[in-house]
Length: 196
Image (cartoon, rainbow, N blue to C red; front, side):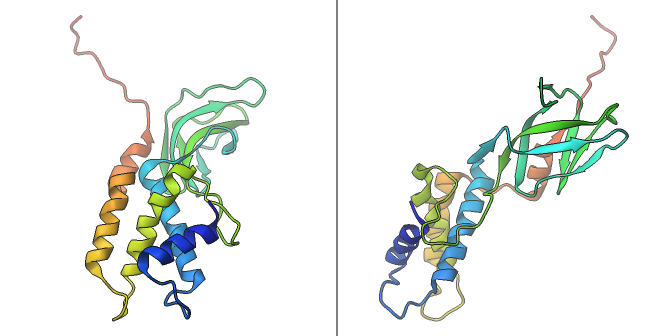
């Protein structure tokens, strides 16, 4: 579904269909883009296992991470004959930390959940998430429209109602601590208590 069609649906549902519009196209487009990012954050809707790579170098354990990465499921090492990367690793805000220094330069390929690669700007741009999710993500854009601080448009009850519908579709938003705990992929060793 194109951005212009999604914008039309938002206008229809907030009853902003007569010119001059209350919301500009740019304001609604910004809300739709935010809705797509929010849906991806909550429900991990964009999964990639080829594009996101990190060049690792000998002696370095900290690497910049693509800002679109929400979480990493798995990592493989090597380009010609990739193998599973078995060392522990952790994601921080913007960094990939590996537990052991590499002994040689190589490439890591991340199997990751991502945010959209670009904002929708042109009328014929389409969301990166599957079409089955696109109309339901508009509930978030509509909620944002009803939160604008204006005597004619502000409606907290409607904003809450649409936010709740969005949560029913995509789940609750995890807090920052929960997201940080997801990102910890360090190897946890359980020592035996001496009994067999």
